[in-house]
Length: 454
Image 1 (cartoon, rainbow, N blue to C red):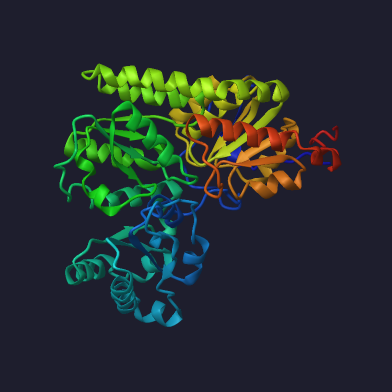
Image 2: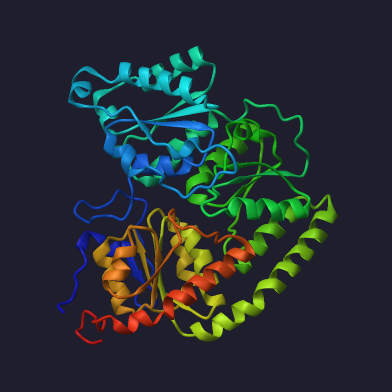
């Protein structure tokens, strides 16, 4: 097989540790023709806001935008299921010419009357930005008429990257924050930001905090409720799980309401334990919280460690490639894989910062390839060259792995099992073991590197 070349303009977004001095370009728009694995601004805002289960989510644009993002996260709800319905104004050629504001107004009023949501989010797509519909004015009018918050989400896809969609979502959420009563919120209280309850993770994490004696005011946005977001300004601490999507909201809340925030990860034995200890440490004036936390961590690790040890014995020496949305998730994955005996030969993200990649450089072993905003050809090239046994990513990376005859584990929106907490680590280890050790890979063709050797 002939060597796979890399686009010259992409060379500074790829780094192999130990091969040369560290230099990484990131936080830039995708190169034309590179077929980025990133999503658009609209999609970025949609994945953040979608899990708010008692809100109406209306996509103002062509039907394809709503279809593309329907049920985009496996965000579980303990109650309302309104978020799982996909609504669109279905703009047509006539609307592009004459404007879609009347259609948006009619759609909003009809849907609000039918479904009685606690709030409505209106997502502006590319075409809306081009034709200049005054989405803010329509939302303001409907909000006054219906008596609920109707919030524009300025997420026109051409405005930037997926990361800009996160910012648009945070700005819409911030309009809700501070509008609810805080009477029943105690001094040892937190908001969990950036946890989306894909497989029930929010329930696991909330249970940990309950056992510690910490009140969870809101989870933004997993199994989310509009009323909880409204009163979230009453919490004493913001705990940011997905830093790429929610740090912007945490900073706005810190500036306006004086709420400090910490960054955590609930994935992997090491990081989930540190997350719980960090929260307990913040409430040092109540030493009982730290005492309960230590007992909780000790109990949970005792339950899962023997089974993880058996899996580690079988997986020792296997190699994994990681490509995820935010680099903070990659940090936890590297630690978790090492915990079960595997090394990481490729680590990449769609939205990493310079600081993130410096952390990755320090965490990764020599020879590991670090990549920003990769395309399918690059991922294929390095997965083959580094002889990875497993690819961990999202729905767009799944076919890449399977076409190369390599195991794949979903660590993104579509998975069905929880991967957070101690039980989540065990679920992850069992999935990795079942995938990597499956006999089916013996039936796939030999993997050929760019040099032509197996």
